[in-house]
Amino acid sequence: MLIKNALIENSEKPQDLRIENGVFTDIGKLEQQENEEVLDLNEQLLLPPFIESHVHLDTCLTAGDPCWNMSGTLFEGIECWSKRKEKLNPEDIRERVNKVVRMYAANGIQAIRTHVDVTDPKLMALKTILELKEELKDVMDLQIVAFPQEGILSYPNGKQLLIDAVKMGVDAVGAIPHFEFTREYSVESLNFALQLAADENKLVDVHCDEIDDEASRGLETVAVRALELGLYDKVTASHTTAMHSYNNAYVLRLMRLLKMSRINFVANPLVNTHLQGRIDTYPKRRGLTRVKELLAEGINVSFGHDDIFDPWYPMGNGSLRDVVFMGLHVGQMMGYEEIMNSYKLITYNAAKTLHIADHYGIEINKPASFIVLDAKNYYDALVKDAAVLYSYKNGKKIVANSPSKQNVLF
Image 1 (cartoon, rainbow, N blue to C red):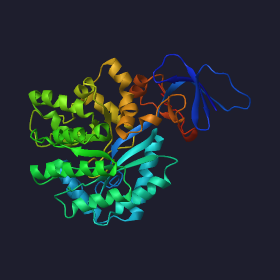
Image 2: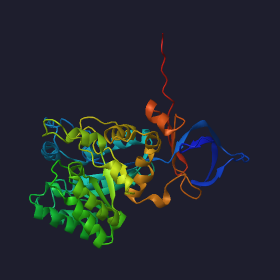
Image 3: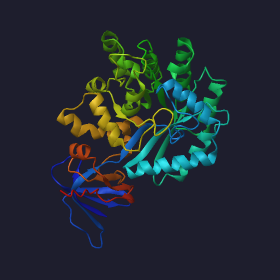
Image 4: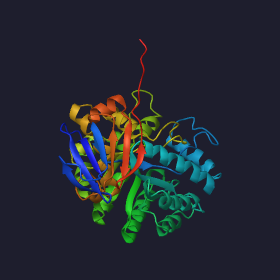
């Protein structure tokens, strides 16, 4: 197959790409070969597929069932979810996950890291989503984090449930230090989770300091253990919203450790802008981690949706465009080049977070996975909320849309 006249990653000069056996074999100005299928993009934007760095597929589409989160806080959301867990069954999980995965696919996402709650004695959601991972692999690559939503030490048998989840075949080990009962539990839970990941050769993704308390310092423990265990960029710290409230003198010292540890960060602009600062009067904190400062220090940051219509976030449509759009505003990253390059927060940076960068990107000999947007560049795509015209995964077309059209009658 030959892709003609593509504007690859904001390039102003159109190029062609040849695909053979699901792999890019040539990029440049290319001539059609005999009987070769041709797709002429007419100078539309071609990007590597979008990647969802952080979402909870097991909780999606459950908002208001059995109750709404009226305070809009993280902790009431956890209470609502604890009640909803009592109604879980495999059919319910399957129906909701399939629906959300197809929403994501329509928006150009081809890989998802999902956190799955393992503070459930039956591990029902985990078993079901592990099955769906295999069933959906032609459409979506699912990476599963064993997430102890109600704590490792603060939930009955939490340690063993996490061990059992790892043995079942998850990709990553999670933790939630700011929800543990004590500071001592917080540190012990992180030591346990990262040691388990090191022993079992798993990735790590910690819900870390998702709170407005500037005394919440789980991040330093995560970074030290990643450094000491040699896990480095296999470790991700998600949320880290307390970092928004840290004093600058502490952050200056912390940055040295973060760079040494080489850990990744995931920010969730939609959800954390909604959840954080709830106990503030005025001024109200934005609550987003220090994205701009982390990037300036060469630390990898990607963006995620986190929740879609669930107890923590009553909206969401699977569009990472909305995530980037909000993140640029709240993070005050509105310079022209920052906007143009912001697609990297949901492509290359996200690939590093998921540890899949070696087989990702628009390069010869890499899988022919890409999307096409109805735009000339990513700035243009963000401004007009450009449609995803095509999504190809390993050379196979999985999405085809028509560009949205408006008829103005005056």
